[in-house]
Image (tube, rainbow, N blue to C red; front, side, top):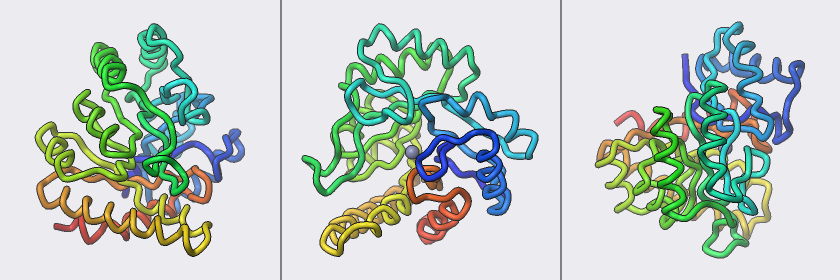
Length: 257
Ligand SMILES: [Zn+2]
């Protein structure tokens, strides 16, 4: 039985009702996945559907909704933070509703069109430290969506527990992960799948990014960083279960060591 460390309760990017949820559950069962980490939805579907998963023999760990900086990336994943005063209030709400962890969005996504190849989003280093501190008060781990080495470094310094995606990470950051015992869910297949929808020229850019990402994953596993298999399924073009096994196949050479 397997664990998918990064899913969403969407189908092809669209929120699901109870009827559609059964499609996700069936796909996970088919793929022999018995545990999933839900990385958030605007409507906090994880809280609503946790029991349905349980009844079907799948353990759902959920953040409910993610926290993202207002105006930045993350609208469909959670709630916007416009003022830092909202942080303790929202984290309290998540704690009361039984969140298993806090998911924080600290950057946009990889794009060949964006400045620095990552779209806008995320908090300042200080703001992120505050979020981590508030989560720690309630003994909640913090899982961080983040791309670009600068934003990754801020997340590592703030002391998050896991880096999600982590494109454009460098070796120095990987060493910090190792020192601090921070894990990494690199979601390689998610970007590969996305790149397949693009023109040949754009695709070449993503192939380069993925090649470098794989080199960093290899380096991370060599020095003993914990790398998790996470599919990002539920996002557009990424089917539950099937995407997990694609990611697992890509990472198998690195994880076996
Ligand atoms: Zn995701």
